[in-house]
Length: 402
Image 1: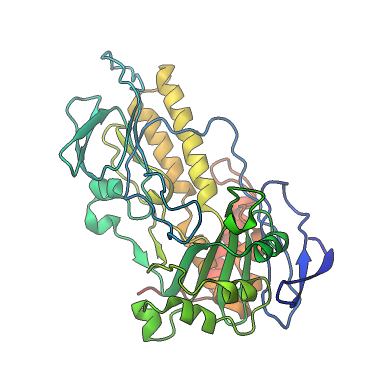
Image 2: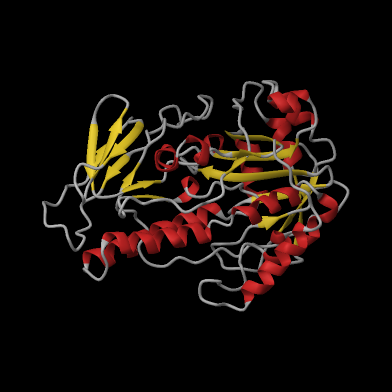
């Protein structure tokens, strides 16, 4: 942990301090601060799992509606739609038919699938069209339609946590954007506050290095639901967020003050879904990423897991292509790994810890970062330490749902 600080001054004239992180790999460090304006901000790092090898998925990715960033973000008025990709057949041992060519389908909404032959799966879309492939891999987010098709609406439904939640992109005038870029950790800058509040700042894009006013940043903020406006997620979100910033340190406080009055902050909820075993239909349908384990961002875990899922899926398809395993055998191994890695409960506990400031030092991310300190699947000794730490913390905090 670094204790190297240098004085800086914000464009508004407010003094601030910037810390540097020295623990962890160059590309995987995350700075976490205590954001009270009356206390010195501290920094820690989260170690992220390293994933080697190929990461491109080879199957069908069921689409959802295209994302629509607010129109006031320069250069982001016309987002590209999320694609649906159909992969070539993975050549299972018993498959001798033709190899399907890859396709790219845009603006499609998945309704259901059926299975026209023992080795194929057909995706049916809302416009009446269909697409046939060998594997459907649902990587369509926390509200996954693929998961609903596999498990039914009830078992696939997410659980809503009792926290107000806002997340949105924003841009700033050039001088303020440069200052914020200098203040932030290059990866992500997050903080707990004594108000039992969480806030994270991210840099999403620099479409033009010479025009800082076009840089796109991102905010994540959560706090326990406290009143009817929070409960109903009233549309006065910017007003409510600014009312919560009293006592915050920079850069968080200034960022919220500088937000444009017409910033678009959509309604959202903090939701999770615990992974459970699913019937992969003889290896023809699987899940990955948020579709397989919806978790909160408070442990910084899900993005790493999604990359790992993609890598493991490619390895499974290689096993099938080389005829060392059937499609069913390879997908069973893949699915077991996805379910085991999806540690939604510890992510839920960490979400609670960010909203329990007095007990934050005992939380999983503070004590362990984002590493297990051992791998259960490989028999690592660190697993017992990880499990003991989690159970000890769980006994000190109550996490509710609504």
